[in-house]
Amino acid sequence: MHYVLLMFVWLIAITCLIFLIVSGVKRWFSRSRDRKRERRAQRFARLAERFRRRRQMDRPAPEPDFVDNIDFRRGLKTVGWIAFILWEAFWISEIAERFARDPHPLQLPYFFLLVVMVGVPVAVYYGVRKYVFVAPGAGASAP
Image (cartoon, rainbow, N blue to C red; front, side, top):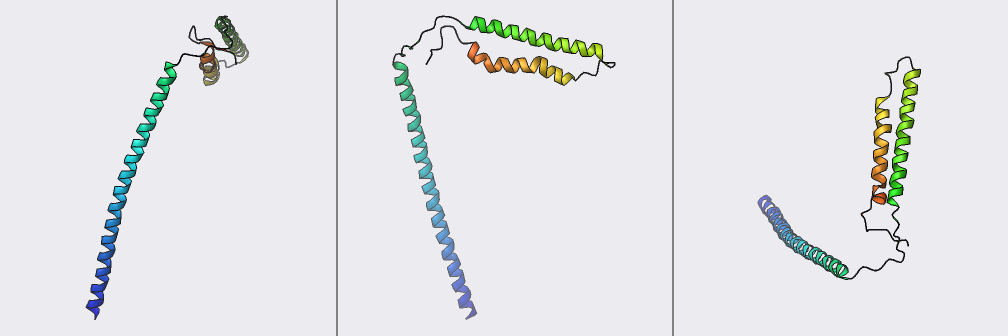
């Protein structure tokens, strides 16, 4: 009786094993099919986007409502250079004043000075360069 029960348990275990293997293979093939469908859909979306851009580039550019032939960049660059020179002059005067005033003048916060003298102007330059340094002929149109 004991062996019959053991054989019955093994039969159930083997049946479950076969069921899990079959369902795993089915799932693997369905995932493979889904991945193929997804790749095909992505390829179709890329092609559709490429064709849309190509149609858009073939169309002539619309004329801007407001054409401004005055180049403001030269004035902005001049103002930027004046602001930069004033900024540097102010901090150099601050350093000179502190250097003359302190009994230990070499105890200046050099990292702070580096940030103030170099970091801030570079950050400002990179922040505004896309607005100031526009390619010639690519004037902005007013809305």
